Image (cartoon, rainbow, N blue to C red; front, side, top):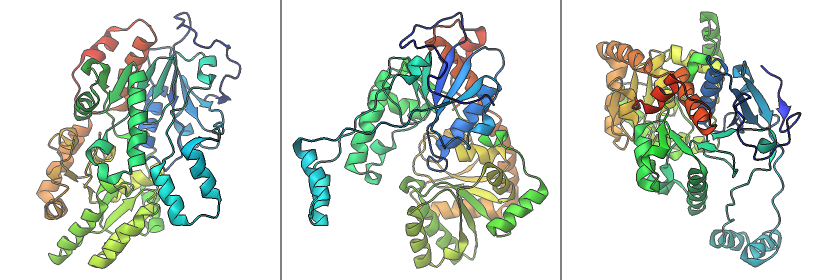
Length: 444
């Protein structure tokens, strides 16, 4: 891995410099996240970083913008033309002295009843202001800025933005009014700023075109792939150690997802109750940093008498995740909303039969290689789990079809699509491969 350096260190002080074709194209990818807090976005960044680091046939430089103290999750996948770029510490927001918000702030620190303070916060929510670039990436002579997660900042450098999905518009009951307003401000502003908006599925592209009125030619599809291909494969001894350490049951299904409302854990719990009533016992291993969301899931499981079937193992390392895929009997994926569904593709690649929601893009992503169900129908979830859990012939077919479907996706292919976009925005000459990738119909 190249040595990381602070923003702007040792680089020419040329804000807003025009692209210089006499030197390599310099691309910055925003990777400022805390490991375990962003769900599948973390795996997307790992897959992209690993693929860009091993990409041949170009002289581009890839800088991954990270926060100091939060680099260990990404460092193993940075090499070759890639390096880490340390972000500056965030500036302290100015204190508002006038207006209703100031009144609310003063009340929050005064001896005012809690209920009244809460009411003021609801009436006068904190306004969301999209941050501006502090000039560091401009001084670093970055030619193209890529925001691969929902966050970003304002800059005059050409940008690519990957907002992933518009769940807040389709499932507003899972968001506060403040969260919806923040997302709308953030997503629309960054979509408007971007030269290219990239999503992972044709379903998501159509949704952004319909909901935000984006020109279809501005939105491109770059599918994800199984990030597990970049992880070290555990030995049998290491897998046995994982089983013992995590106290796993002999046979289990896996659901790797934080218990956000749209991940539908509560209906999954209800489906386990339906199965138990039919005398079908299906232990489920749940990965992810659940936080307080785990409490509601466990409460429902206890009320239904199936708490013993749930095994929360928390956020797991890449090695542990690969081991879990290798030991599980199946994956169940009851999500109500996805812009892609990365864990499903990882399971297909691992030879793990999948019972999967048919919501949004998932039926297209799985391509007939999963047992689909309506995620709003508890009985349908239970039926699909039972078929995959009990029917060995079905399992064999799903394993073969799943591996074939997963082979349609690779991070190398996706990285090449992004490189073509980077070159186009950086005013670099496109190769025949670049043009073919930009013109090819999406496979998801």
